[in-house]
Picture 1 (cartoon, helix red, strand yellow):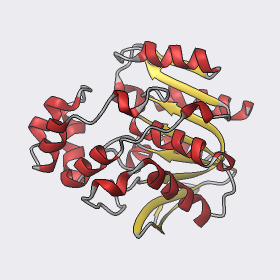
Picture 2 (spheres, rainbow, N blue to C red; picture 1 turned 180 degrees about the horizontal axis):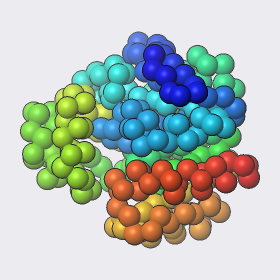
Picture 3 (cartoon, rainbow, N blue to C red; picture 1 turned 90 degrees about the vertical axis):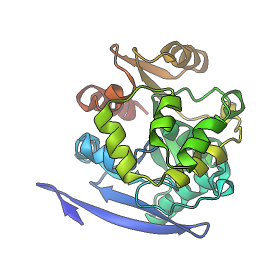
Length: 258
C-alpha cells in the first residue's frame, strides 16, 4: 500500500478466467477505470500524475491488463482474446461493486475499453480513448509475425526496430525491465478478434497527438461517429500520454458533460 499526501492507493487483485488481474484503487466519486497501452502497466498512470489528478474528484481504478505489470503473464496467445480481456475488466468492476464506470484507455488500451463498451454496454458510462483509433478493425492491422518472434526470443533491439511507434530510449529501457517479452508476444499475437465497434452507444471522447502519423484517422472517425475530438498540439505518442496537465482537464470537462 502506498500513500500520497491526502489519500491512499490500495493495491488489489481479482481472479478472472484462472488468472490474477492486478489493479489499484484511489480516491472517491464517480468511478474511472484506467487501462494502459502495450508494455506500459498501470504504474505509468501514477508516474504521469494522472491518478493523483483524477482522484481529487473520482474513484480511480488503474488496471494491469493480462500479461503486463503485476497481473498474470501467460505465454499462451489464446488467453488474450478480446472477449476474455473484456471479461477481466468486468471482473475488476465486480470486485469493487461498481455497476458502471467511465473507461479510459490509451494506445492498446483503447481497444480493450472499446470492447467492454461493445460486449458489456451496461457497465460503461462513457469512453475516453487516446493514442489509437477504435473503429479500425484488428483484421486490418494483423500482428507482425517478425515482431512477435523478436519478442518471444527476447530480442528487444529487433522488436523496437519493428514496433512502428518511436519512443525515447529511457522509456524503452524501463519497458524492457518491467515486462516479460514472451508474455508480451503472446498478448500481441492473441488479440486479433474484430469486435463490432458500431455497437458503442455511450458518449466517447477521442484524443490524439497531432504529431502521430494516424491523427487524421482518429479525427475522421471521431467526426463520423459523433465523438468529442481533442488534438493535443503536435505531440507524439509518448508525449501525449505524458501531457497530464493538458489532457486531464479536457477529460474532466468531458466527464462532467456526460
